[in-house]
Length: 310
Length: 316
Image (cartoon, rainbow over all chains, first blue to last red; front, side, top):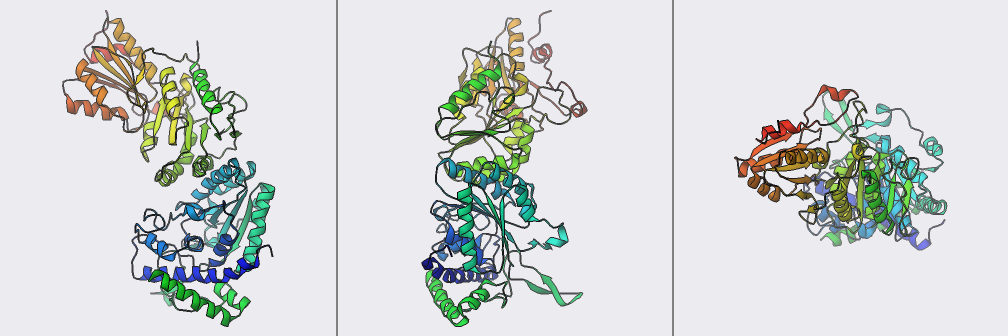
């Protein structure tokens, strides 16, 4: 593994921290404490923690409206994150950005857009600027299976490749865009072949193993820097928090995929598991490290977070 | 004679060569005709780059803002203003995020307004005021040697974001030069060229040559007119123009923009509110089906009719 052991030791703790942080936000959403829309990323914790672990000191991260997991992973204080969601002046952006545009330049999150595909374009400039300034830094830009349908996805790959810019284009593929699954709204897109068309290295990650993700993202970041060119990483994941809504004509309830707002069936507790299968990074963590150890770790993290926000 | 495009090109080359870490980019800016001479001979300053780009206007518009985030200044030269429509998301949404914080970096878009005619129903968009009004974007037009000197000098690489538009129709014409041109403020948003007693002429958008023709027509009548250009496309400060119009008693407003929201209408309303006695003649362009096919695409100004409208008759 390319990542130092000391860093690996903290990864599990951070996955739990990001999970608990989102669950705390979820409880606040249930209480309708926020005036702004919030897009939780339950189930996305492994990739966010991995990105956080491998980012260099001058690296930049450009995000989308579903950014809470990266913000929690990079931020030092959950209290400041919650304050930002409340639009308080003590928030990470002084209450000026809320959720969908939440960035935190002091943590390397330089830009966040609520417009699908917008951050891809800006990331090209961030990457070019890093090179002009001789920072030796990589630019991470997160997008999704919905945003990659936008024309700017094609344009951005072209520009990144043409200008030989060190960027990691990370596609979080949860197979949903709002309320339609991929196969309900479009033809398949072979992202590996699209990458190949531009001569861009492509890799697919799945399984929600934060240790594996960290190892691979570290290698891909270095590849982008060594080759002075972009790489594409497609991460298969599930956005957890869906539920069934009682409706006429649906004896078992209508399936509602989680998109934004409160996840009504997700409850905060000292054991933050949502799904007892590999679609949940907490489940994968327990499988890797042992359930008892991870539960003990979770209690510790939960206690720390409660102290932070008290 | 120095052509308008040569004059503008000279200023841009000088500023670019003297700027550190400046990125100049756009399609064919250092290839072929170099945007019909607009970017010919562009050489980067220390640490800078001149980049010929792919055709990806949406991304390239966002790229300038991304460079700004990294503290790097840039100029995006665009062959046609029409192409900037593809980057509207950034002109509104990215700009709204960027403008929250002061920056030391500059991002300037220099589009060529294709107003030379016979392009057909497309490739002739010139409604710059509408563009800038979308998200209150700073924007300026360059219509002669004097305003080019003032506006490029003041704004081309200044911190912040703006659009500086040039006119393709004027490219090969002699760059008009008025010896007494002066900006009314540091912004160079309104420029004053001449003082007169009998009329106040104000050129909006890219109609300065037409305004000069009207000014000369008034002189032929042995009368005199003040001459202004409003180069700033966003909330110009009218006070000096209003005062001049009250003094002369006659206001002539020329605006060749094809958009429905004309900046000059605001000036007219402001003058009427202050002094309804001022006689006003406004020449602009209303929608015409002729726009939908190749045509001259030029605002025709009948100087005689203008003078008659404000009581300055033409010589028999």
